[in-house]
View 1 (tube, rainbow, N blue to C red):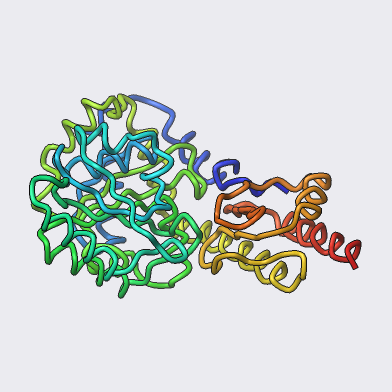
View 2: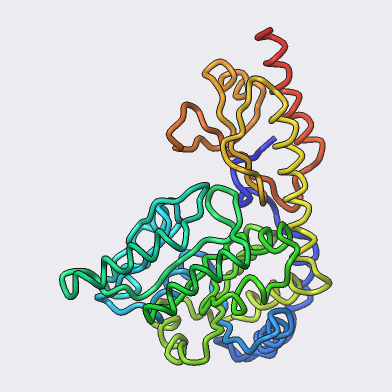
Length: 347
């Protein structure tokens, strides 16, 4: 019953098989292999738009590199106070941009509004050279709190970026879960809604180690290849990253995996929401469930071997449960029984 993260999961058998099929013969190095070109073509089919695709190994690198092409060293990047780039990336975006400033905005259930970012950006411009120049807005899809932005909400935020001549970046570490949750096309959640750069993650959803920077805006990204190389993220045997991507994007594996993870999260959230010992803290819209419990329940779950993450959310004992593409239904049911048993003891 390990719900600490989707990062603790194993690798999709299909992706491992794809790597084995790739592991023969020779291939051109440094991203000029046929597999990487095939992935780019496949992504253009899925997103219904020309894209520049740069495979990298980590989500932190993808975010930092993606932001580096849309933010100067004196620029400001507006994001949620809960965003991964704000709290969990060890100033990598600042480093890769050469010194840009991350500006955290208050959010509700992980999402900030058009009005919030509009006010903050206007204030930044009003202060002139004394403030970091507003350059980029970053949203997370799905958010750190397990919620999702609808195409309409993304479009509203994009309107702010266009109004002020800024760019819109999307951290899509769990992009597949958001697409599966909303049941809309990838295009509707990205470039059609005004997203310029998407950092598309596969690792949390069944890959071994595969992330990518996708650039939709034809006016940017010309020098991203140099930035990828300079940062040390241009892998020589790049075909093995692209092999993961090609399998991931074939036969809708990425959506199948995400749908199962979402389904298990919904099952867990629905059943826990019926128990008096558990309070669902945020809406469960993707594959994360946040539950507030008392100390006794916390100790009982730990003693039963249930693994989770403690989350700082302004309430006592908020636990985060994350499901993945191969979370066994039996584990979800066992976790629910562990909560239910504690309820019976309390009564």
